[in-house]
Image 1 (cartoon, rainbow, N blue to C red):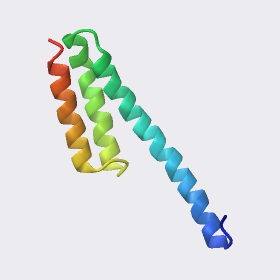
Image 2 (image 1 turned 120 degrees about the vertical axis):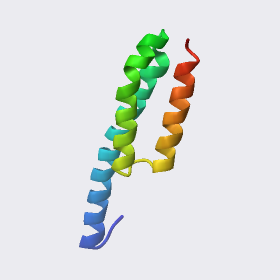
Image 3 (image 1 turned 90 degrees about the horizontal axis):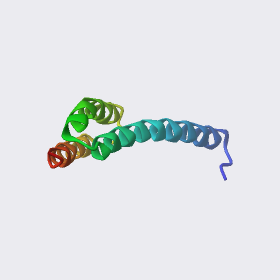
Length: 84
């Protein structure tokens, strides 16, 4: 439990950042699942730009690392290509 005023503020800030990051990460994962759950390669191809955009946004906002974003994008392309 924080004792000082500064520590209490830090806890508040951390909670706000955690919730903000959680929404960004959730949007990213949902977009990725849309691509993977698409029944055909055509639908996966349509969902792909949205997923790429969400992954890039998460990386830009430092929710995930740049290399993690590149890895997600690469794996998503690979898995979406297998649907054909």
